[in-house]
Image (tube, rainbow over all chains, first blue to last red; front, side, top):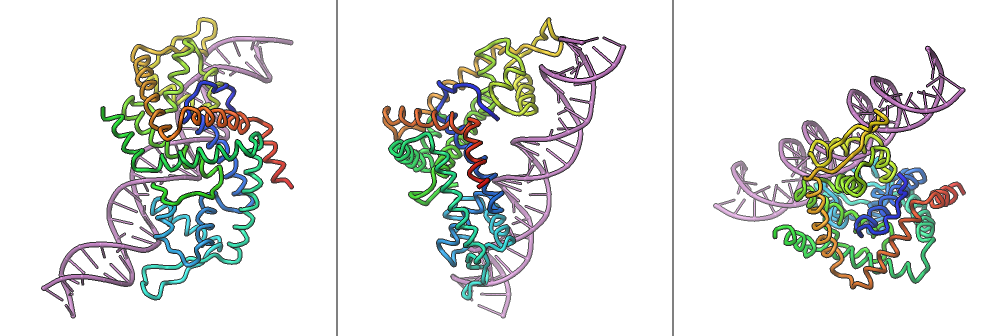
Length: 159
Length: 159
DNA sequence: GGATACTAGTCTCAATATGCAACCATCTCA
DNA sequence: TGAGATGGTTGCATATTGAGACTAGTATCC
């Protein structure tokens, strides 16, 4: 689990991997313990809480997760009584999602926890550096999720 | 798969996750196609190539992977004829690992590919920004793999 | 009033990944 | 010689995941 090596001369992806892996794995376990939910579930919970009445299809779209996975996450939130659903009057296939009281509460807990964890994670960085990092990651994030990026990858390998 | 949302006001961990996830997933598939190996296997291959005669135990230590996983990776590299082993004359439990010619070749291919992929990944960043990012990630990487980090997490949740 | 095609959402199944722990072989040291 | 450590492998049980079949409801078109 521990990386002894300096990874001084490593690749960006490698460093990213280390940080993401380590931070997320640790956080996920903590969230699970404190809220009973995994990070991904909390993310969907937040989505529902932010746009009450949202639907499966919308969540699918905005998270970019797989259909079956999304379905399972929603099932799990339903099962934990964090959200509930009501049928759409117009379309019986569709249901609208809302957070329960318990769901709202868990969401708050998760947010506080998330705040605290983020502070810990960024302890070695100054506010300025933190802003820099956020900006850089934001741009990289946009880039790697863009179709142009995928295209560039194709090209690089085709040749 | 695609993230439509801006993730403007998201957490650092989330951004990290997006970038790492996306970049690594994409790269891994490409490495597999071009070299027949996953990134992790290539990493071990590189270790072996860099310190010929290294052992299972050393690799275990420097990668920080699980014993069984490490064993399987080595098996797989052996099976693909990228490395070979010879028994230690001093200790019959130990074997020394070396890269085969094919292994060296694959390593070179992987390095070139890795170079190209990194260029693509960092396309939106200037050289300066790239250096910044690397520095920041390096420090974060050290931090999140340190025992102090884990300790801080414990503390934060205990209270 | 079908027939057809489409969408929303669920579920099953099979593949893969992963960690744990038992295990064998060998070595060390007393 | 025996107890315990070390090197390395393997079996097993479990979690994760995506693909695609499937149900149910809707829309369209004749």
